[in-house]
Image (cartoon, rainbow, N blue to C red; front, side, top):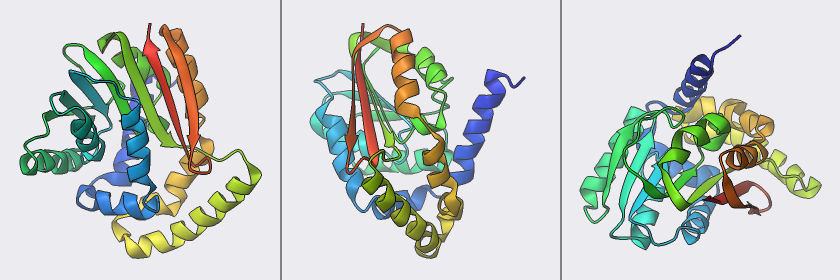
Length: 236
């Protein structure tokens, strides 16, 4: 039987196989792969974020969402967590270039990272398809204050047949064009990411994990022809 630690390490290895060494091209790549929708999705996440003193950005990557959060809550302290060192190097460089962002980074796995203090909001973008939702919520929920907000966003597989056919056509094309445009992401475009999106059922499993941990006011929403999803809830 595979232990939770071994399974978590395997998921971490998958993330590294996709992204290690590519932090410097991530911002350009995510705009390309999402046809510019990434900025819209980030804005929809931020709309759900109330005024906050401390915000935890899980899977923070290069800091795109952290910057959006700082623009809405300039006085908030933001803690970004990511498992990929070179992405955090880009994150930290963003903070150096934009000192008005009150943030710091932590290298760690969202399922196991040790955190200090309480947060008013916990957010993630493009993280939950890579993790075990039970382990994720079990780890971070104790650090979310009572009444705090948990928000997760990621890709989903469209349920509408027309949207699904369009998604399949687009991803087929992107998996062939992508390696030419961004060769550093060859493992992502070699059906790695789209294969994972086909297999994951993260909205359902995340909702169940939130319920088991006492969250209420749980909501979900499909975005952009059902190619992305949002789940958000209140802690207690």
